[in-house]
Image (tube, rainbow, N blue to C red; front, side, top):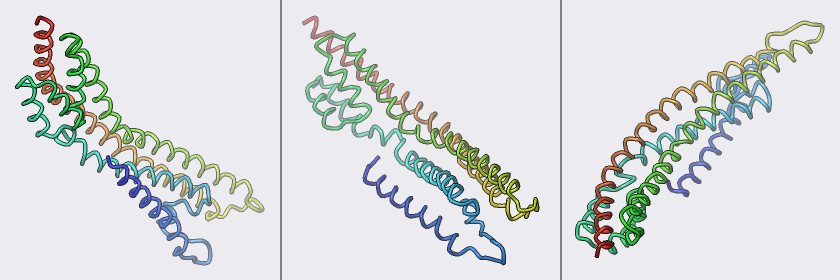
Length: 252
């Protein structure tokens, strides 16, 4: 979740993409006609600029998606979102009745749990109902943030096959144009090879994004739901205690 890390990663992806486009074009062998390496075909080089752009977008989408999946494996964890020591420290403040200290601690260590409890603590003077309402609203907002964090995986899983379909249609259009414009009606298979290659490989790359993307999104969606339930159980106990303090203040 470090923006500097993402900037460096984006630069690395860009450099990799440029190298991936140029290398096959430079090292592809020419055997009398135009013979392209597998890398050149994957990058759409036989289909010209449009093919390269289409394939490059698909490849960059896959690189970003798998990079984000790794990021989610690292950061979408209960102990990363709410460290255990935070729970212990906050519980001690609340058990001792030091609500002011608990609020200061929440402000100094912002995370899913402390923002939820902080919202509750800020409403103590308004009574127990207001405490619970504020905590519930903040918990929903924090859960939404975690769910949003994994949403790029779903976006890539949706965009990948659509770009693959775009490449497929584009490749077929190019092939039919070559057939239509063939001199004397004589069609050389190599004339349409580039378009057909783009059509098939775009479909393959799109599916290579969609299948693992949907699988990992389902995995993380369930994981986020489990994390939310786990944190909610901890937060509910704290909120009930805070609500009891609020009721005492109202009565006193």
